[in-house]
Length: 428
View 1 (cartoon, rainbow, N blue to C red):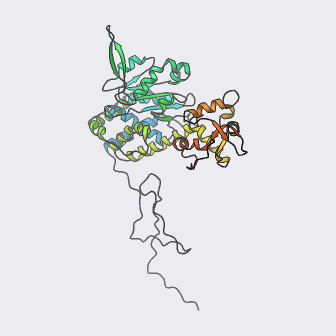
View 2: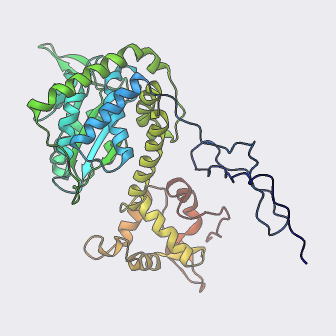
View 3: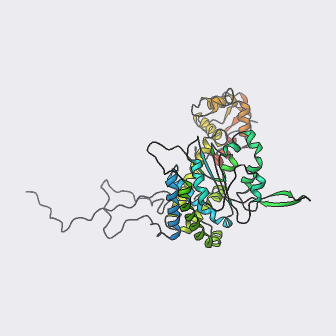
């Protein structure tokens, strides 16, 4: 007869597992697990030891409630491409009411691939909620920088593609682009002569600006912008029609309450140096939005940094996919990897492999595909030039040595492939 197992006095404690660690949140990276001694399942967490939990967001405040209300108002009339984009637009609007505090004036680039993506409707909402909106339709650059004071307006530029869409347009509007570029940073002035005696006078350019258009704006503007990539509404997505007479009073009331909350915080905002999830110009551009979130408290500090990290990373991916720039470097890196990291490739062989990539633009580049001259011109900006290289069969031809790319790969496309530091042998 088999012995019986005594019944336990009480039911076993419920198993409670630790919260999964998520990159960018407290508790990441997780501690290394202890090596298992056998194949049995791990013991449950004792009931008297609480599981690790994510740090909760601070309680809501008046400032965070205002941002929540503004976010809901924007979402009522416009469908943004992501929750992070909606958070970013909300914070950007609030940041316009604290412009004297900022060292950098972030641009808001509202771009889309075609008409009817909601770009102009978003600008309609911005017009009624930002600080001192200044629509620049048919406005000359001279009139714009004469309107910028120590309390700058918020510049709103619709149909920006009609200003910068073609080389001829861009050349004609070079002064406006220069004003928008210079105005990203404080203390960047333009000098013009004024009066009958033509006295030189310095005009300020510092002001936040939102620009909407079809297709990407010039690189110099995109690089200084929080980029919102709009898209057409899908079936089933709907928004409330915006009617100025009906909806503007409520937006103005909210705008005035945000301004009244923000103005007493001007000095505090100017002194804050928040921890940022990005670096360099992206950090300069996003810093005002993160500061506004930190002032508002609630869930906004966490959400602002999540939006910053994700949206900046998305723009890096877009940039890497653009012809030229980091795209050509990444595709050349792939060619060298496919050729087993050879020391060098002739120009003809490298061009052949680049054109064979069905997902790249190089086969249709120009009239007959990417040429040796095109390739040399693209790589010259990175300090990479063709020269005599020794090939595997012992012959010498014009081409490129792999070790000439290593520094550029590290700087412009570090996530594509790991790059070693071992130099290739140079041709004497």
